[in-house]
Length: 89
Image 1 (tube, rainbow, N blue to C red):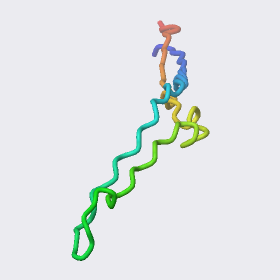
Image 2: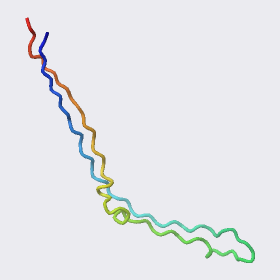
Image 3: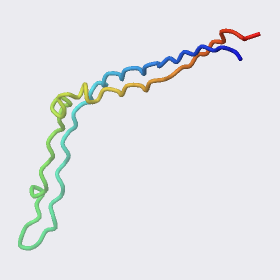
Image 4: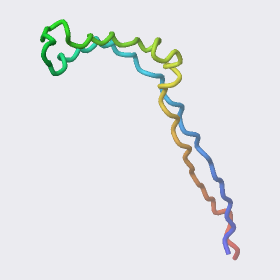
């Protein structure tokens, strides 16, 4: 029966990458149209909904965005090696 030595290496997964550059903040949306007009109320453009506010910068939305949006770490791998050390005669 041959004699065998075994090594089992655990290869650690890589670290996640840094978060990408944040995009530009968005413009606010246009307010909606006036609701259904009923007499005696007039129909006027100024009765439409208010425009939405501009978007937040990433720092305002999430002060820890550089950490929170970092890439995930890779999974650990595994490698086995076997060495035949001798065969009895």
